[in-house]
Length: 157
Image (cartoon, rainbow, N blue to C red):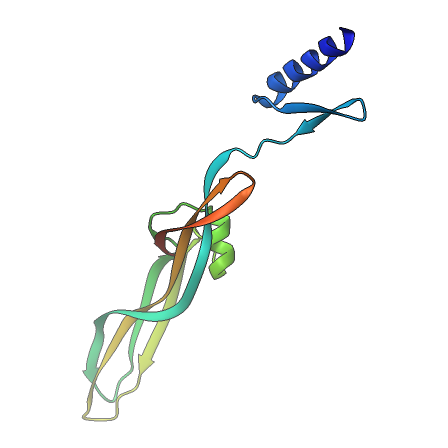
């Protein structure tokens, strides 16, 4: 009777601590926990590709005739962000493509040209982006096994 009370007390303690019931068995006269595998779903980074280079629209800067110096300084705010449905952690995406999501900064570039006498020049520029493509896959864990699903989501960091 005392042994049953101990096992019952141990089971109650496990429920209070872990919030779930574990199954116990007696092995060599001692209670042993039999883990319950349960069911849960999670997502993994299935694949990634990139970077590929993408370009923004062409912009026109200063123009003029030589002899002179044409100069433009362009300052832009830049950041690493993503579009799509994020089901894995930021850390998993960052590790897969090697960039820090949420990073931002301001960059400046100065361009200049010295057109020869009697010739017209114009500065042109465009933004350049590195793009990545990340595929996430749904995994179902059931009865101690992982079952990859044909369910995918896409993120573009």
